[in-house]
Length: 252
Image 1 (cartoon, rainbow, N blue to C red):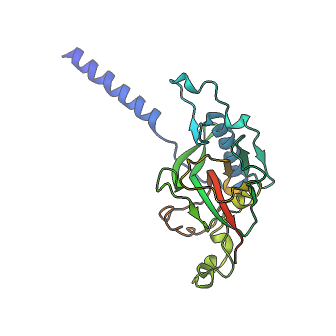
Image 2 (image 1 turned 120 degrees about the horizontal axis):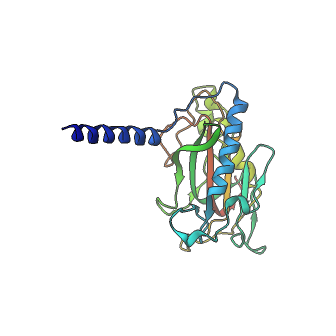
Image 3 (image 1 turned 45 degrees about the horizontal axis):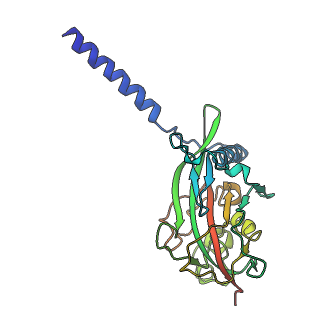
Protein backbone atom coordinates (compact mmCIF):
# COMPACT_ATOMS: atom_id res chain seq x y z
CA UNK A 1 0.00 0.00 0.00
CA UNK A 2 2.90 2.31 0.88
CA UNK A 3 4.46 1.67 -2.53
CA UNK A 4 1.21 2.52 -4.31
CA UNK A 5 1.00 5.78 -2.36
CA UNK A 6 4.59 6.67 -3.30
CA UNK A 7 3.90 5.95 -6.98
CA UNK A 8 0.82 8.19 -6.90
CA UNK A 9 2.75 10.96 -5.15
CA UNK A 10 5.64 10.75 -7.63
CA UNK A 11 3.22 10.84 -10.57
CA UNK A 12 1.44 13.83 -9.10
CA UNK A 13 4.69 15.76 -8.65
CA UNK A 14 5.75 14.94 -12.20
CA UNK A 15 2.41 16.14 -13.60
CA UNK A 16 2.66 19.38 -11.61
CA UNK A 17 6.20 20.02 -12.86
CA UNK A 18 5.24 19.33 -16.46
CA UNK A 19 2.23 21.60 -16.19
CA UNK A 20 4.41 24.45 -14.92
CA UNK A 21 6.81 23.95 -17.82
CA UNK A 22 3.97 24.09 -20.33
CA UNK A 23 2.31 27.18 -18.92
CA UNK A 24 2.72 30.32 -21.01
CA UNK A 25 3.75 33.37 -19.04
CA UNK A 26 0.87 35.76 -18.54
CA UNK A 27 1.40 38.92 -20.51
CA UNK A 28 1.41 42.15 -18.54
CA UNK A 29 1.51 45.27 -20.69
CA UNK A 30 4.54 47.37 -19.71
CA UNK A 31 3.64 50.84 -18.49
CA UNK A 32 6.43 52.34 -20.58
CA UNK A 33 5.91 51.74 -24.31
CA UNK A 34 9.67 51.84 -24.86
CA UNK A 35 9.86 48.62 -22.83
CA UNK A 36 7.39 46.96 -25.24
CA UNK A 37 9.51 48.25 -28.12
CA UNK A 38 12.53 46.52 -26.57
CA UNK A 39 10.54 43.29 -26.20
CA UNK A 40 9.55 43.54 -29.88
CA UNK A 41 13.11 44.09 -31.09
CA UNK A 42 14.51 41.24 -29.00
CA UNK A 43 11.74 38.86 -30.07
CA UNK A 44 12.26 39.80 -33.73
CA UNK A 45 15.98 39.02 -33.44
CA UNK A 46 15.17 35.63 -31.88
CA UNK A 47 12.58 34.94 -34.62
CA UNK A 48 15.09 35.73 -37.37
CA UNK A 49 17.62 33.37 -35.80
CA UNK A 50 15.11 30.52 -35.53
CA UNK A 51 13.58 30.64 -39.01
CA UNK A 52 14.66 30.30 -42.65
CA UNK A 53 13.08 30.47 -46.14
CA UNK A 54 12.19 27.28 -47.99
CA UNK A 55 12.42 26.67 -51.77
CA UNK A 56 9.32 28.83 -52.44
CA UNK A 57 10.23 31.51 -49.94
CA UNK A 58 7.95 30.41 -47.11
CA UNK A 59 9.12 31.13 -43.57
CA UNK A 60 9.96 27.86 -41.82
CA UNK A 61 11.19 27.14 -38.30
CA UNK A 62 14.41 25.18 -37.94
CA UNK A 63 13.81 21.63 -36.74
CA UNK A 64 15.71 20.21 -33.78
CA UNK A 65 15.21 16.64 -35.05
CA UNK A 66 15.30 16.90 -38.87
CA UNK A 67 18.76 17.51 -40.33
CA UNK A 68 17.47 18.47 -43.81
CA UNK A 69 17.49 22.16 -42.88
CA UNK A 70 20.97 22.19 -41.35
CA UNK A 71 22.46 24.03 -44.31
CA UNK A 72 19.72 26.64 -44.59
CA UNK A 73 20.57 30.23 -43.73
CA UNK A 74 18.79 31.98 -40.89
CA UNK A 75 16.64 34.98 -41.76
CA UNK A 76 19.20 37.02 -39.83
CA UNK A 77 21.83 35.92 -42.37
CA UNK A 78 19.83 37.06 -45.41
CA UNK A 79 20.85 40.75 -45.27
CA UNK A 80 17.90 42.15 -43.31
CA UNK A 81 17.51 45.92 -43.61
CA UNK A 82 16.12 47.96 -40.70
CA UNK A 83 14.22 51.15 -41.53
CA UNK A 84 14.02 54.18 -39.19
CA UNK A 85 10.58 53.02 -37.96
CA UNK A 86 12.08 49.73 -36.76
CA UNK A 87 10.46 47.79 -39.62
CA UNK A 88 12.73 45.14 -41.14
CA UNK A 89 12.63 43.83 -44.68
CA UNK A 90 14.45 40.93 -46.35
CA UNK A 91 14.69 40.61 -50.14
CA UNK A 92 15.00 37.00 -51.23
CA UNK A 93 17.81 36.46 -53.73
CA UNK A 94 16.62 35.13 -57.08
CA UNK A 95 12.96 35.85 -56.40
CA UNK A 96 12.70 39.45 -57.63
CA UNK A 97 11.27 40.44 -61.05
CA UNK A 98 13.74 40.99 -63.87
CA UNK A 99 14.46 44.63 -64.86
CA UNK A 100 12.30 44.15 -67.96
CA UNK A 101 9.39 42.88 -65.87
CA UNK A 102 9.58 44.97 -62.71
CA UNK A 103 7.21 47.75 -61.69
CA UNK A 104 7.87 50.45 -59.11
CA UNK A 105 5.37 50.29 -56.24
CA UNK A 106 3.89 53.68 -55.35
CA UNK A 107 2.61 54.73 -51.94
CA UNK A 108 -1.01 54.89 -53.16
CA UNK A 109 -0.98 52.04 -55.68
CA UNK A 110 -3.48 49.20 -55.97
CA UNK A 111 -1.48 46.05 -55.38
CA UNK A 112 -2.19 42.38 -56.11
CA UNK A 113 -0.37 40.26 -53.56
CA UNK A 114 0.06 36.62 -52.56
CA UNK A 115 0.71 36.63 -48.85
CA UNK A 116 0.84 34.98 -45.50
CA UNK A 117 0.73 37.51 -42.66
CA UNK A 118 0.89 36.55 -38.99
CA UNK A 119 0.65 38.65 -35.83
CA UNK A 120 2.65 37.95 -32.68
CA UNK A 121 2.82 39.33 -29.17
CA UNK A 122 6.32 39.81 -27.77
CA UNK A 123 6.57 38.88 -24.10
CA UNK A 124 9.47 38.83 -21.67
CA UNK A 125 10.07 35.88 -19.38
CA UNK A 126 13.10 35.53 -17.13
CA UNK A 127 14.78 38.38 -18.95
CA UNK A 128 14.33 36.86 -22.41
CA UNK A 129 11.86 38.10 -25.04
CA UNK A 130 10.08 35.90 -27.56
CA UNK A 131 6.93 35.78 -29.65
CA UNK A 132 3.71 34.15 -28.50
CA UNK A 133 0.03 34.25 -29.48
CA UNK A 134 0.65 33.66 -33.19
CA UNK A 135 -2.52 34.54 -35.12
CA UNK A 136 -3.24 34.50 -38.87
CA UNK A 137 -3.97 38.00 -40.09
CA UNK A 138 -4.17 37.13 -43.78
CA UNK A 139 -3.29 33.93 -45.61
CA UNK A 140 -3.97 33.49 -49.32
CA UNK A 141 -1.20 30.91 -49.64
CA UNK A 142 -2.76 28.23 -47.44
CA UNK A 143 -6.27 29.57 -47.93
CA UNK A 144 -7.82 30.33 -51.32
CA UNK A 145 -4.53 30.34 -53.22
CA UNK A 146 -5.79 33.49 -54.96
CA UNK A 147 -3.83 36.74 -54.53
CA UNK A 148 -5.52 39.56 -52.64
CA UNK A 149 -6.23 42.81 -54.47
CA UNK A 150 -5.99 46.28 -52.91
CA UNK A 151 -5.65 45.37 -49.21
CA UNK A 152 -6.73 48.28 -47.04
CA UNK A 153 -3.81 47.81 -44.68
CA UNK A 154 -1.46 48.89 -47.51
CA UNK A 155 -3.41 51.98 -48.54
CA UNK A 156 -6.79 53.44 -47.67
CA UNK A 157 -7.69 56.61 -49.60
CA UNK A 158 -9.04 59.64 -47.69
CA UNK A 159 -12.21 59.46 -49.82
CA UNK A 160 -12.69 55.73 -49.27
CA UNK A 161 -16.27 54.99 -48.10
CA UNK A 162 -14.79 53.36 -45.02
CA UNK A 163 -13.59 56.81 -44.01
CA UNK A 164 -16.32 59.04 -45.42
CA UNK A 165 -19.07 56.85 -43.93
CA UNK A 166 -17.31 56.30 -40.61
CA UNK A 167 -19.27 57.08 -37.47
CA UNK A 168 -16.36 57.42 -35.02
CA UNK A 169 -13.46 59.86 -35.02
CA UNK A 170 -10.94 57.01 -34.97
CA UNK A 171 -12.45 55.32 -38.03
CA UNK A 172 -12.23 58.57 -40.00
CA UNK A 173 -8.42 58.37 -39.99
CA UNK A 174 -6.28 56.46 -42.47
CA UNK A 175 -4.14 55.17 -39.61
CA UNK A 176 -7.17 53.21 -38.39
CA UNK A 177 -6.78 50.88 -41.39
CA UNK A 178 -3.19 51.18 -42.64
CA UNK A 179 -0.08 49.47 -41.31
CA UNK A 180 2.46 52.19 -41.92
CA UNK A 181 5.54 50.02 -41.50
CA UNK A 182 4.31 47.57 -44.13
CA UNK A 183 3.54 50.34 -46.63
CA UNK A 184 6.95 51.88 -46.03
CA UNK A 185 8.87 48.63 -46.53
CA UNK A 186 6.86 47.30 -49.48
CA UNK A 187 7.95 50.27 -51.57
CA UNK A 188 11.53 49.00 -51.29
CA UNK A 189 10.44 46.05 -53.47
CA UNK A 190 9.35 45.95 -57.11
CA UNK A 191 6.10 44.38 -58.31
CA UNK A 192 5.92 41.85 -61.11
CA UNK A 193 4.11 42.85 -64.29
CA UNK A 194 0.98 40.68 -64.17
CA UNK A 195 2.53 37.53 -62.74
CA UNK A 196 0.17 34.72 -63.69
CA UNK A 197 -1.96 33.31 -60.90
CA UNK A 198 -1.65 29.93 -62.61
CA UNK A 199 2.11 29.91 -61.98
CA UNK A 200 3.50 28.57 -58.69
CA UNK A 201 4.14 31.42 -56.28
CA UNK A 202 7.75 32.37 -55.52
CA UNK A 203 7.71 34.66 -52.51
CA UNK A 204 9.89 37.75 -52.77
CA UNK A 205 10.73 38.15 -49.14
CA UNK A 206 9.75 39.13 -45.64
CA UNK A 207 8.62 42.30 -43.89
CA UNK A 208 8.57 42.40 -40.08
CA UNK A 209 6.67 45.32 -38.57
CA UNK A 210 7.12 45.91 -34.82
CA UNK A 211 4.07 47.13 -32.94
CA UNK A 212 5.29 50.73 -32.88
CA UNK A 213 5.16 50.80 -36.70
CA UNK A 214 1.74 49.08 -36.78
CA UNK A 215 -1.10 49.88 -34.36
CA UNK A 216 1.06 50.28 -31.22
CA UNK A 217 -1.39 51.06 -28.41
CA UNK A 218 -4.28 52.45 -30.38
CA UNK A 219 -7.19 52.40 -27.91
CA UNK A 220 -9.60 50.72 -30.29
CA UNK A 221 -10.11 47.48 -32.23
CA UNK A 222 -8.87 48.16 -35.76
CA UNK A 223 -11.08 47.52 -38.74
CA UNK A 224 -12.16 43.94 -39.42
CA UNK A 225 -10.45 43.45 -42.80
CA UNK A 226 -12.83 41.39 -45.01
CA UNK A 227 -11.60 37.83 -45.44
CA UNK A 228 -8.51 38.36 -43.32
CA UNK A 229 -9.44 37.86 -39.67
CA UNK A 230 -12.03 38.28 -37.01
CA UNK A 231 -12.08 41.47 -35.00
CA UNK A 232 -9.22 41.08 -32.54
CA UNK A 233 -7.15 43.56 -30.62
CA UNK A 234 -3.96 44.32 -32.53
CA UNK A 235 -2.59 46.39 -29.67
CA UNK A 236 1.13 45.72 -29.09
CA UNK A 237 1.17 43.18 -31.95
CA UNK A 238 4.12 42.66 -34.30
CA UNK A 239 3.31 41.66 -37.90
CA UNK A 240 5.33 39.25 -40.06
CA UNK A 241 4.53 39.41 -43.80
CA UNK A 242 5.73 36.73 -46.26
CA UNK A 243 4.70 37.79 -49.77
CA UNK A 244 4.95 38.23 -53.54
CA UNK A 245 3.52 41.26 -55.38
CA UNK A 246 1.93 39.94 -58.58
CA UNK A 247 1.02 43.35 -60.00
CA UNK A 248 0.47 47.01 -59.21
CA UNK A 249 -1.80 49.61 -60.78
CA UNK A 250 -2.13 53.35 -60.44
CA UNK A 251 -5.12 54.27 -58.32
CA UNK A 252 -7.73 56.22 -60.33
